[in-house]
Amino acid sequence: MGQRACEGLDPELLQHIRECPCPCDHMGYGNYLDYQQIPPCPPYPALSRETSFNAVPHPQISREHPYHDVIRNYHHGVPRDLYYPYEYDSCSCSSGSDTSRSNGRGPWCVCLVVCVVVATLTAGLGLPLALGPHDVGHLSSQERLDLVKKLLKESPLIDGHNDLPWNLRKFEHNQLNQLNLSKMRAEEPWSSSKWSHTDLSRLVAGGVGAQFWSAYVPCRAQHKDAVQITLEQIDAIERLVQREKHTLEMAHAVDDIRTVHKEGKIASLIGVEGGHALGNSLAVLRTFYNLGARYLTITHSCDTPWATGQDTITRDGLSDFGKNVVKEMNRLGMIVDLSHSSVYTAVSAINVSAAPVIFSHSAAYTLCNSSRNVPDEVLRMVARNGGIVMVNFYAYHVACGINATMKDVIKHINHIRKVAGIEHVGIGAGYDGINVTPSALEDVSRYPYLFAELLADPTWSEKDIRALAGLNFLRVFEEVEKIRDEWRKMDMLPFEQLGPKRNVDECISKNS
Image (cartoon, rainbow, N blue to C red; front, side):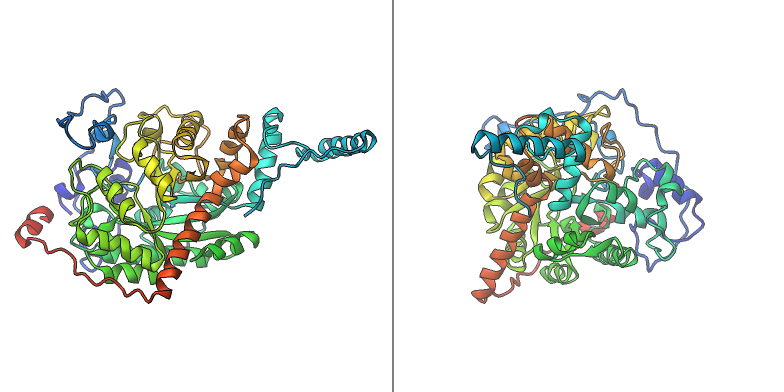
């Protein structure tokens, strides 16, 4: 891997490559079958925190452009050298009823007795047993936190995106036999890494009921070994879950999530991040599904021959082949994920999909004009589609800078709720794929504190918290499975269109 291959990699990874004695290609930009020594890379330039957010030139978009108001300055607001520490190959940044109670009326003496009993229980247990859905704001912060932990035991917290598998590849080369996911927090390189936010003890403390683990593939692997890398990442996730089977368990369906959560374990699901992982093959898509992948992120930061990624502002969205990718996902029962997609790809996919879609780790574009975030018009389309936007915690996506707080995340949650509705918002923090977290949301243990803070707002009820935490996602997943089952009854045949042809000379030029 020469100087050009090293350009754009984050400093932490470069240091690891320099110091690691093994001959493997850590980032997978070559092929694991091609073992080679890694020559030293040039020093990585320091990133200036004073870099102006207005330093990036804005493309000229005609006011006649059909999406002028939606995508004007769509990928601006964050300098590219800060927003993508990997030079566009950054890893992304993976039922219960409301416990409110009716206030029945009866004889005054009965009411008095009930009040005394409830007051005694509340004082004794520290739980707001007598509170209605909008009374929890009067609780202390500790009482709200206790209530949240109770709610998360009844209804699963489902996070849409976690990049721990990429860190396992980056730091451990997917050699997991000696890995202790319970103690890694105290071990190098995890203990000092800005990219590390996940281990078993913190997952349990965070009340996580289900986690989508990302099988991420760098854009530079496109047209090379992206399919192989994805298979290796799926294998790593499966082995990790098997290794930690006392706490984690694989889930492939809605009912699996509920069952695993009832057993007190964390349901583990696989999301393939980046359509370039398909190698332009619907057969590969079907293979990923058969191996357990339950969503595909249509694009990453790069275009594919059939879809435009987040850094592209053109009229191109999905090609005919790309539309068939979406339809085949509907047929399989695989969730369409539009985080990282261009606005045109998102609009096209929503219009094509018979099932609800998700944004597995995005936020609101109106509050931070990052290209990962979702414009209001698309939020309204998601609501009409029945999908959800799972809010990402990356500081640059929620505050357009490094000084993000929990309150910034809450602003994004509330904005999406206001525009799309409470049924269409979820959580997709992106931990282990982000290097700057909001204060008070430093790792996967902090979800309950976010929900407890939301409950301080009288407009948030226990029912709303359950919906945000996971019930909204379960509804989406159920609908995806319902569409799959309906199409099966109709004997819908697999889509067999061949992938788009590529110019060989262009391919060689781009990947040399």
